[in-house]
Length: 492
Image (cartoon, rainbow, N blue to C red; front, side, top):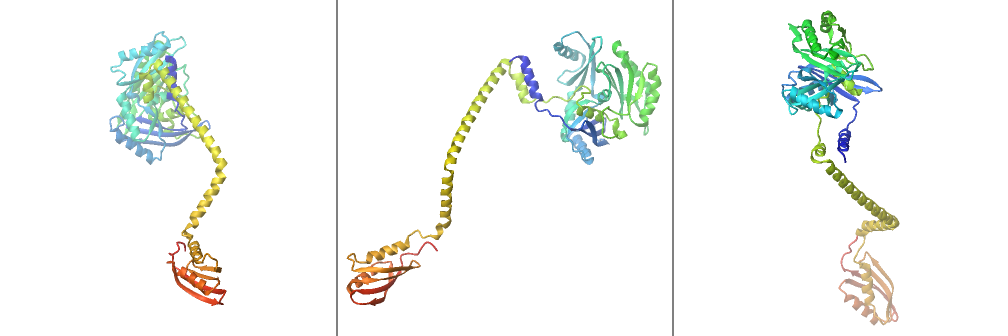
């Protein structure tokens, strides 16, 4: 088995159990602000099932994950949200970025090049950072890559909180990337501004990928209960960001999309539009987070949610940006990748095939034996059923019968008392209740009859022997009765 075949097998096993979800919970983490939307895909359109906007008492990043998860679960329960599968928008402030131009290398070598660049550009390595990438390709053949890194402990903390909230994450992605990719032509350069509760996220996409990402924490100003965005600061940061990009990238950006709600967003667009117009940039205030088709109009407070955009893209099979959800490595995957070489894997496959053949043969033999026994049973089934019925009847009526054969023993004993020479004979013998016996017969003379009575009296089972009637002399007709005391019957 070649290395390519091994990789194909591992990839197949990884995707074997993946199933598309028809409904997903979208979560947006903006500081201590939580947005939640539940979307369902039905007949090619999306339906907004439930939504929630609330403030968290605990920070998702610095609070205890168990307590944060419990608080999120409580808010979801109060809103009646039961969906477990979720798509989570990661704050842009968590992300470290590194931009590089890709040299003319074969595709299989670009991964090694980016790994070296990441080790040189980031202060920490892969063991502490989860690094994703976004590549851009331009008509002239020039390629660029943006590497985006998030501390692994941030992701681990978020996963623990979601687990405590009884949620199963399907994806971790950038909310501003989900907004920036909404309906965008990959050939155009677009700058996206996402107005959050405490910061402004800046994203530049060109050539089908991310070329710049920043979080402007100082742009949001608070004056009592009022908030405003420093348009001069944002315009200056946009000029610096585009100026730091190669000319082929910065010069291609001509559109600025602003995603924000209410008067704050409208005032900001009004303030910054003249400043950006001098830079050749056109500003547009967006009304929806994504271009997906919904079954009915969205509420204004949800229409611009990054979580809505990410979830809608997930349900439509669109990948809006880099994936930050750490892959779950199963033990069998680790075994395949670390313990077995291709040769060993081939031998293991051959062994597994041999075992499968043996097991299959054993099952075939067992099935043949079962079929043969079933055939024998069908040939004797009627006889067995008849015997079982007779046995059941016997068990049912056995208590009502005397197993000592009392009546036969009475007849035997009386018969033995009659002389063998035939001088005395019986005509009638009646047994009542297996205890009272009446016998009538004929004797040659009185002496023969008396001898019969003596024989009966000699039997220990016979009591109360009485002669009821004697007529004639020779021959003599007699009738006697006796009480049989040879034990009580075992029946009724």
